[in-house]
Image (cartoon, rainbow, N blue to C red; front, side):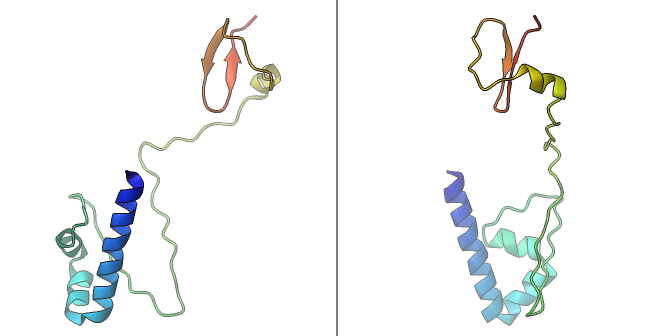
Length: 109
């Protein structure tokens, strides 16, 4: 489902870029009021989000790194004391406190 949405968004983006290249009036509107134009073209722009269109010079390309999302979290490194208690052997279910995608822990002896 997400892949279908990504493909649809890519098509809409491509259509907007092609129209901006071929239609100076559309390009001007896009530059002046991008959020409105994007919404008209079926791209969701939530209220409160500022959209800026940057026309790059021919030999320049930008890689845009967005802010970290508020819900993003960093996984801390595994403490050495925990690493010593881990092994590649499967753990028996008895005494298992927790398990996640990165490690398993046993209850203290």
